[in-house]
Picture: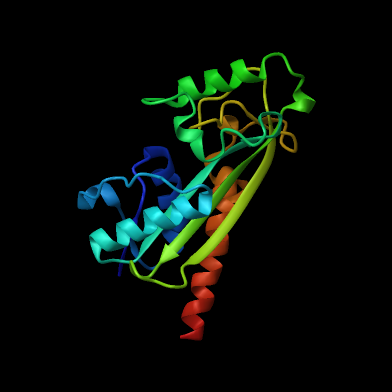
Length: 200
C-alpha cells in the first residue's frame, strides 16, 4: 500500500521518511507524483495540515500524511508560528529566517527567550475523509544568542534544549526523532493507526 507525503521540504521529508519506516506502507513524497504545494491559507497549524493532506489525497487518489509545524517564541507573542518557513518574507530561507529572529530578539537574556516547536500531523484516508487522524507534538526550548551545530534544518541551530544543554542542530538524528515535536506527533500517529487497524 502506498501513502503520499504532502511536503516538498527536503529536511522535513527526510525526517518523516525515517520516522514512518515502521509503517507497512510505501511513503511517496508528493513531488514524485508531480503534485505541487498548495497555498497555506489556514490560520493555524491544524488547518494548514488538513489543507495539505486533502490536496495530496485528492491529486493522488491515495491516503495522505501532512505535517504543519513551526516555532513559537513567547517574547514575540507566538511568532513566527504558522509563518515560520516564510518569516523573513517571500523567498526566505533558513539563514534569513534565523537572522530575522535574532534581530527581533536583540539582546534579551536567554531566560526571556523561551520558545517551543509545534507540529501537527494529519492522516487522511481519502480527500473527503470526514474524520482525519490529527496528532500534535511540542518541544520546549529557548532561542540562543547565536547559532550552533550543523545538523537538522530550520531554526535548529538557534533552538537551545535546556535538558540536553545543546542546540537542536547538535543532537543525534535518532535522538532528535525521538524527543522532537515531530517525533512525538508521529509516534502518536503510528499508535493511532495501529489501534485503528486492530479495530478493523
